[in-house]
Amino acid sequence: MRNVNDRRRALGQHFLRDAAIARGIVDLVAPTTHDLVLEIGPGQGALTGELARRAGRVIALEVDRRLAAELRGRFESVEVIDADARTWDYGTLVAPPGGRVIVLGNLPYSVSKPILMSLVSARRAIGEMALMLQREVAERLAAPPGGKTYGSLSVLTQLYCDVRLALRVPPGAFRPPPQVESAVVHLRVLSAPRVEVPDERRFHTVVRAAFAQRRKTLGNALAGGLGLASDTVRRGLAAAGIDPGRRAETLTIHEFGQVVTRLS
Ligand code: SAM
Image 1: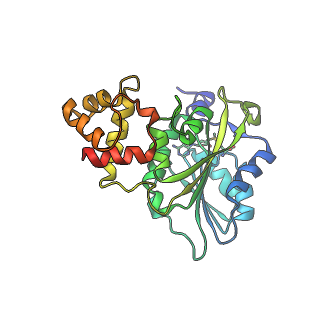
Image 2: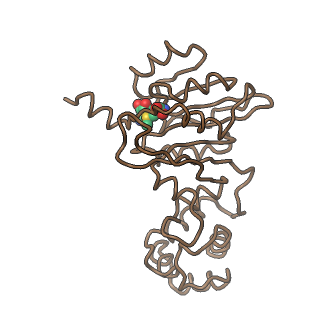
């Protein structure tokens, strides 16, 4: 049988103990009484208290029923929902008149990527986000082209959001301290995707194929990953003005847009 420590580890329960950092995270999105804030993984309430003081309405999703019950007792105004943040339907959120939908949370790191994917899929319902992540993941989200950290996660997030690496947080700010460093990203959802593409799903497929074999040239990675003849890929890349000998990590989002348009 799993003991309490195993359960805590599995749920990524590293609780923020630094009130100044908690305030700094909430300051990034500066909620007002007009806003609806959805908190992911409130835990023992380090961020929840600050949100309850400042936002008009706060909803919190917590998978640990014991913690959720404690929070209900402490914060009457917060709607604490027993839910898995990977599968909750963020598309149901509606901005209050004159206000924003803000998503904020110190995410459980082992499931941060599926949560991020659900949030990006529901982007039309969300205005801004402040998310604490494992530092490497935060750096990948915000990375510009040209380096090893730039990949499909960067391109597919930046297609829909302005992303800024806002705060670094050391392990000592949490109890128990995690074994990795943490960072907070601030995301503002764009009113339309950064580049116009004929088919967004195709854009995702092409970007994932381009980065799936990072060491290959773009031409070879796309031919292999998309199951296309090398000649077809070469012609498409030539029409987009892209050298097939380049690597995926050197392409801007706009260049990916050109590639997708020419390969569709
Ligand atoms: N926000 C608190 C803080 O900063 O101190 C706690 C953050 S802790 C890193 C992550 C929280 O997410 C824990 O309370 C954990 O129980 C919760 N959690 C883990 N997996 C979850 C999931 N799939 N859906 C919702 N909450 C989850």
